[in-house]
Length: 83
Image (cartoon, rainbow, N blue to C red; front, top):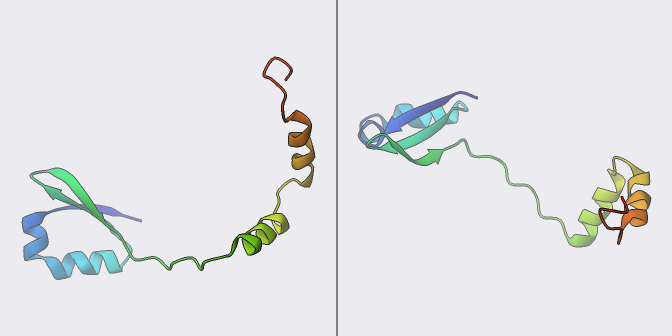
């Protein structure tokens, strides 16, 4: 993704070009007197909302290392000296 900086005056004068750049995937930093004040980024799809139970199920199904939980349970309560 490319990135461009645009001053407030340039944004006012060239709004269509800036919007076209954002639509094409470009990230734009809006500046005032050369200082960044805001980012204009392409709109992303919102993730759908999951209930706590559904999230727990999805996370359990995607566990990278099923044995990690047992190892963490074994370490729980241990001090750094015991590790």
